[in-house]
Image (cartoon, rainbow over all chains, first blue to last red; front, top):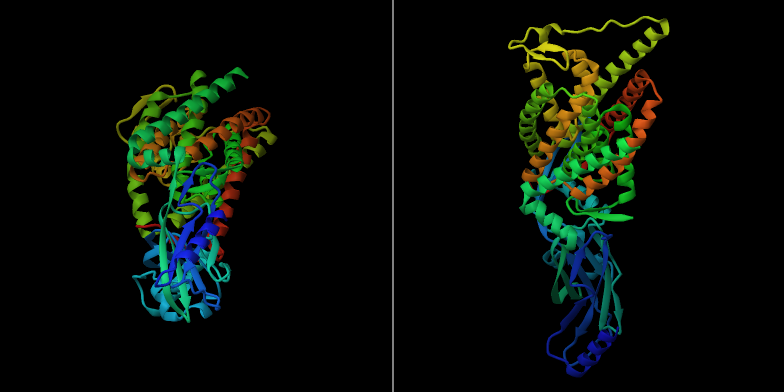
Length: 249
Length: 303
């Protein structure tokens, strides 16, 4: 809060030409260690108005935190000869591994369709680049994907959850679930007026495994053979120790 | 209570995993099976990615087989010559299995195939064991000593016969080689030791004397599951050491309790119990295959 206060004082004193967004995040780096149960990011900042003239109108804001996009294949089960097996599939080239948006108002009223599509504000406006099948099938698969990702907490929309103070300061909490993919994330803030994005800022966030977990992961990826030997050796030792215990009792 | 698994990339309740290992260890101590056929489906059910569950379960089986095999070895219950042939077959099967596994993964049919093969195998083996143990119980009730049937005519006709003194056999090594290979395929693709197939096959098809069957099958399982761990580590990086370690801790404790429980029960009752467990798992999986799944869509990672 002290940081926010200083920011506010500085903003009122300086003032500059275009509307600008100044952002900070509670953590620029999330380390996944053995106790990792998920995290909560506090994204906060201030709107810097030209000549310090704060409008009476409450500003519209959308805060988007997104993870690395990766190609995935979505398969749908269908009944074949009495059992359910995977049949049709659609490949999505750019599905983000994590996507959370918090807004100051319902997305439908906050931003117009065009701007929502350009800046990907809202889960329904994500550009997933589906690459097989045609028309209705793709729509159905897209809905299926959105539904799956929403339920695992990897994609979320929190409408009306951006707190705004004195039309200048803003803040939102973004929940990061434990099953989050690692990689380079960004926190994007969009200032929206009459349905159009008039200012934006982006801040990088890194989510990565740390300490022992990272060490194990890197070893598995780069030293497959040695990792395998260690795994087998551990299993053999555990079995041998167990047989000693059994013999003694 | 939660612990993050670095390879599976999710947080688990470690008490649940250790408990799972203990349950499976209890069964393996009690029935002399590795218990992979329970570990893999239960891990997948808990939310561990199937590939990680299969690979890490193989690592755990190595550990639980070592303590069993050592105990049988001290009592002279391991036929190393027969074991060697089975291991050679197992390595061939593991190599074939990993090719098959990757092909099915690309087709997107790996989970359905795993479930279907489980239903067929567990259903068949469980059904046969149930029939056999019930028949034995009825016969002993009537006081008739069962005649041991040996020498399957097809296997007796195979060429290049060898003597396996410890098992009391004079048969072609091709039969155990093929058996080892089939088990090897299952180990790589399903994350099972394969004892539940190998033990009945050794008794009923090869006609091995029962005192070397369990020790020799465990001997084969150690080598083939170790090779499987290496294969998965190098090719797909899906062995989660932390997960395997948790399962091992539970398995060690459970196995001891299982061995003690087994000493109070007759072998026929044990076989009956195992048959019922196998059938229960098969039925549960069959229901899962035929009922409309709650989730029609599933995500497959970058491929």
